Length: 211
Ligand SMILES: O=C(O)CCC(=O)C(=O)O
Ligand SMILES: [Fe+2]
View 1 (cartoon, rainbow, N blue to C red):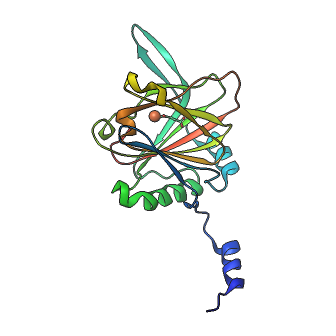
View 2: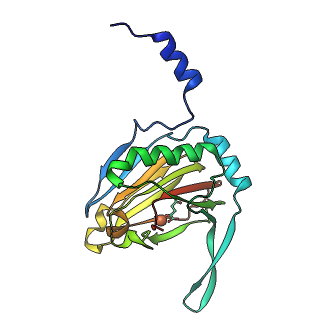
View 3: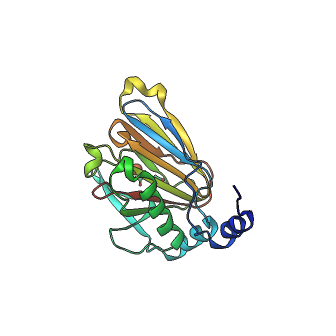
Protein backbone atom coordinates (compact mmCIF):
# COMPACT_ATOMS: atom_id res chain seq x y z
CA UNK A 1 0.00 0.00 0.00
CA UNK A 2 1.40 3.40 -0.81
CA UNK A 3 0.43 6.59 0.91
CA UNK A 4 0.76 9.86 -0.92
CA UNK A 5 2.57 11.71 1.82
CA UNK A 6 3.25 14.74 -0.31
CA UNK A 7 -0.35 15.44 -1.21
CA UNK A 8 -1.60 14.66 2.30
CA UNK A 9 0.89 17.13 3.66
CA UNK A 10 -0.02 19.77 1.12
CA UNK A 11 -3.74 19.40 1.55
CA UNK A 12 -3.46 19.77 5.30
CA UNK A 13 -1.43 22.92 4.79
CA UNK A 14 -3.27 24.60 1.98
CA UNK A 15 -6.68 23.05 1.49
CA UNK A 16 -7.86 22.35 5.01
CA UNK A 17 -10.90 24.46 5.83
CA UNK A 18 -10.57 26.60 8.93
CA UNK A 19 -12.71 24.05 10.71
CA UNK A 20 -11.94 23.08 14.27
CA UNK A 21 -10.77 19.58 15.04
CA UNK A 22 -13.00 17.44 17.20
CA UNK A 23 -10.34 14.82 17.92
CA UNK A 24 -9.12 16.19 21.24
CA UNK A 25 -12.44 16.62 23.03
CA UNK A 26 -12.45 14.88 26.41
CA UNK A 27 -15.56 13.98 28.39
CA UNK A 28 -16.03 14.15 32.13
CA UNK A 29 -19.15 12.24 33.24
CA UNK A 30 -21.03 13.87 36.14
CA UNK A 31 -23.71 12.63 38.51
CA UNK A 32 -27.38 13.15 37.71
CA UNK A 33 -27.04 12.24 34.02
CA UNK A 34 -24.83 15.24 33.20
CA UNK A 35 -21.44 15.54 31.52
CA UNK A 36 -18.93 18.16 30.41
CA UNK A 37 -16.72 17.95 27.31
CA UNK A 38 -13.53 20.02 27.07
CA UNK A 39 -11.46 20.74 23.95
CA UNK A 40 -8.34 22.84 24.46
CA UNK A 41 -7.18 25.27 21.73
CA UNK A 42 -10.10 24.07 19.72
CA UNK A 43 -11.07 27.21 17.79
CA UNK A 44 -8.87 28.30 14.87
CA UNK A 45 -8.19 32.03 14.43
CA UNK A 46 -9.01 32.75 18.08
CA UNK A 47 -7.13 36.10 18.10
CA UNK A 48 -9.03 37.38 15.10
CA UNK A 49 -12.35 36.03 16.42
CA UNK A 50 -11.81 37.84 19.72
CA UNK A 51 -10.94 41.17 18.04
CA UNK A 52 -13.90 40.85 15.66
CA UNK A 53 -16.38 40.02 18.43
CA UNK A 54 -15.28 42.92 20.62
CA UNK A 55 -15.51 45.32 17.68
CA UNK A 56 -18.52 44.13 15.68
CA UNK A 57 -21.11 42.60 18.01
CA UNK A 58 -23.90 45.09 18.84
CA UNK A 59 -23.24 44.71 22.58
CA UNK A 60 -26.07 45.62 24.88
CA UNK A 61 -26.05 46.33 28.59
CA UNK A 62 -28.99 44.60 30.24
CA UNK A 63 -30.83 45.69 33.32
CA UNK A 64 -32.83 43.31 35.44
CA UNK A 65 -35.40 43.64 38.16
CA UNK A 66 -34.06 42.15 41.37
CA UNK A 67 -36.48 42.22 44.29
CA UNK A 68 -37.42 45.91 44.53
CA UNK A 69 -34.48 47.28 42.54
CA UNK A 70 -33.32 47.36 38.93
CA UNK A 71 -29.65 46.35 38.64
CA UNK A 72 -27.12 46.22 35.80
CA UNK A 73 -26.33 42.71 34.59
CA UNK A 74 -22.56 42.59 35.04
CA UNK A 75 -21.57 41.74 31.43
CA UNK A 76 -22.54 42.84 27.91
CA UNK A 77 -24.71 40.53 25.83
CA UNK A 78 -26.07 39.88 22.35
CA UNK A 79 -27.75 36.80 20.86
CA UNK A 80 -27.59 35.74 17.21
CA UNK A 81 -30.95 34.07 16.61
CA UNK A 82 -31.76 31.28 14.15
CA UNK A 83 -30.80 32.22 10.59
CA UNK A 84 -28.73 35.28 11.53
CA UNK A 85 -25.18 35.45 10.17
CA UNK A 86 -22.44 35.09 12.75
CA UNK A 87 -19.80 37.86 12.80
CA UNK A 88 -16.80 35.63 11.95
CA UNK A 89 -16.46 32.68 9.53
CA UNK A 90 -14.52 30.67 12.15
CA UNK A 91 -17.64 30.81 14.36
CA UNK A 92 -19.87 29.61 11.52
CA UNK A 93 -17.41 26.77 10.90
CA UNK A 94 -17.31 26.00 14.63
CA UNK A 95 -21.09 25.81 14.88
CA UNK A 96 -21.29 23.52 11.83
CA UNK A 97 -18.54 21.29 13.16
CA UNK A 98 -20.25 21.03 16.56
CA UNK A 99 -23.58 20.26 14.89
CA UNK A 100 -22.11 17.36 12.96
CA UNK A 101 -19.88 16.09 15.80
CA UNK A 102 -22.82 15.92 18.23
CA UNK A 103 -25.63 15.17 15.78
CA UNK A 104 -26.06 11.53 16.74
CA UNK A 105 -26.19 12.32 20.44
CA UNK A 106 -28.11 15.60 20.27
CA UNK A 107 -30.42 14.75 17.38
CA UNK A 108 -30.52 18.32 16.08
CA UNK A 109 -28.12 21.11 15.12
CA UNK A 110 -26.95 24.06 17.18
CA UNK A 111 -29.05 27.05 16.09
CA UNK A 112 -28.45 30.16 18.21
CA UNK A 113 -25.27 31.86 19.42
CA UNK A 114 -25.49 33.80 22.67
CA UNK A 115 -22.53 36.11 23.23
CA UNK A 116 -21.32 37.49 26.55
CA UNK A 117 -18.58 40.08 26.95
CA UNK A 118 -16.83 40.06 30.34
CA UNK A 119 -14.96 43.37 30.27
CA UNK A 120 -12.84 42.63 33.35
CA UNK A 121 -12.84 40.59 36.56
CA UNK A 122 -15.88 42.46 37.89
CA UNK A 123 -18.09 41.04 35.13
CA UNK A 124 -19.65 37.68 36.00
CA UNK A 125 -22.66 35.42 35.81
CA UNK A 126 -24.34 34.08 38.94
CA UNK A 127 -25.31 30.44 39.60
CA UNK A 128 -28.00 29.29 37.17
CA UNK A 129 -29.00 26.55 34.71
CA UNK A 130 -29.98 27.40 31.13
CA UNK A 131 -33.55 26.36 31.89
CA UNK A 132 -35.59 28.69 29.69
CA UNK A 133 -37.28 26.40 27.17
CA UNK A 134 -36.46 22.74 26.84
CA UNK A 135 -33.37 22.69 29.06
CA UNK A 136 -35.74 22.58 32.05
CA UNK A 137 -37.25 19.23 31.06
CA UNK A 138 -35.04 17.56 28.42
CA UNK A 139 -31.43 16.53 28.01
CA UNK A 140 -29.69 19.02 25.74
CA UNK A 141 -26.33 20.67 25.10
CA UNK A 142 -24.83 24.14 25.47
CA UNK A 143 -21.47 24.45 23.67
CA UNK A 144 -19.28 27.34 24.82
CA UNK A 145 -16.38 28.73 22.81
CA UNK A 146 -14.24 31.12 24.83
CA UNK A 147 -11.82 33.80 23.54
CA UNK A 148 -9.75 36.37 25.38
CA UNK A 149 -8.55 36.14 28.95
CA UNK A 150 -9.20 32.83 30.72
CA UNK A 151 -12.06 32.61 33.22
CA UNK A 152 -13.34 29.64 35.21
CA UNK A 153 -16.69 27.99 34.68
CA UNK A 154 -17.80 26.70 38.09
CA UNK A 155 -20.23 23.78 38.20
CA UNK A 156 -22.17 22.40 41.16
CA UNK A 157 -24.97 19.83 41.57
CA UNK A 158 -28.35 21.40 42.33
CA UNK A 159 -28.79 18.93 45.16
CA UNK A 160 -27.14 20.56 48.20
CA UNK A 161 -26.27 17.09 49.54
CA UNK A 162 -23.97 16.52 46.54
CA UNK A 163 -22.10 19.82 46.70
CA UNK A 164 -18.73 18.16 47.36
CA UNK A 165 -18.82 17.15 43.66
CA UNK A 166 -18.52 20.82 42.66
CA UNK A 167 -15.59 21.71 40.41
CA UNK A 168 -14.41 24.34 37.94
CA UNK A 169 -13.16 24.23 34.35
CA UNK A 170 -10.74 26.81 33.04
CA UNK A 171 -12.01 28.37 29.81
CA UNK A 172 -8.92 29.62 28.01
CA UNK A 173 -8.40 31.42 24.70
CA UNK A 174 -9.87 29.21 21.94
CA UNK A 175 -11.15 26.51 24.31
CA UNK A 176 -14.40 24.60 23.89
CA UNK A 177 -16.53 23.55 26.88
CA UNK A 178 -19.77 21.66 26.26
CA UNK A 179 -22.35 21.07 29.00
CA UNK A 180 -24.49 18.07 28.07
CA UNK A 181 -27.05 15.51 29.16
CA UNK A 182 -29.06 16.73 32.15
CA UNK A 183 -26.45 19.39 33.05
CA UNK A 184 -28.90 22.31 32.84
CA UNK A 185 -31.43 20.51 35.09
CA UNK A 186 -29.35 18.66 37.64
CA UNK A 187 -26.38 21.04 37.82
CA UNK A 188 -25.84 24.79 37.93
CA UNK A 189 -22.97 26.85 36.52
CA UNK A 190 -21.48 30.28 37.20
CA UNK A 191 -18.58 32.52 36.16
CA UNK A 192 -17.69 34.28 39.43
CA UNK A 193 -16.00 37.64 39.73
CA UNK A 194 -12.22 37.53 40.11
CA UNK A 195 -9.76 40.05 41.53
CA UNK A 196 -8.20 40.71 38.15
CA UNK A 197 -8.93 39.64 34.56
CA UNK A 198 -8.69 41.11 31.09
CA UNK A 199 -11.58 41.01 28.62
CA UNK A 200 -13.16 37.71 27.61
CA UNK A 201 -15.92 36.88 25.14
CA UNK A 202 -18.00 33.71 25.47
CA UNK A 203 -20.05 32.35 22.56
CA UNK A 204 -22.68 29.79 23.58
CA UNK A 205 -24.16 27.64 20.83
CA UNK A 206 -27.57 26.22 21.71
CA UNK A 207 -30.20 24.13 19.90
CA UNK A 208 -33.70 25.40 19.14
CA UNK A 209 -35.67 26.52 22.21
CA UNK A 210 -32.84 26.24 24.74
CA UNK A 211 -31.78 29.45 26.52
O1 LIG B 1 -19.45 32.86 30.23
C1 LIG B 1 -19.82 31.73 29.91
O2 LIG B 1 -19.14 31.05 29.15
C2 LIG B 1 -21.11 31.16 30.46
C3 LIG B 1 -22.29 32.03 30.20
C4 LIG B 1 -23.57 31.40 30.63
O3 LIG B 1 -23.61 30.50 31.41
C5 LIG B 1 -24.84 31.87 30.06
O4 LIG B 1 -24.85 32.95 29.44
O5 LIG B 1 -25.86 31.17 30.20
FE1 LIG C 1 -25.53 29.50 31.35
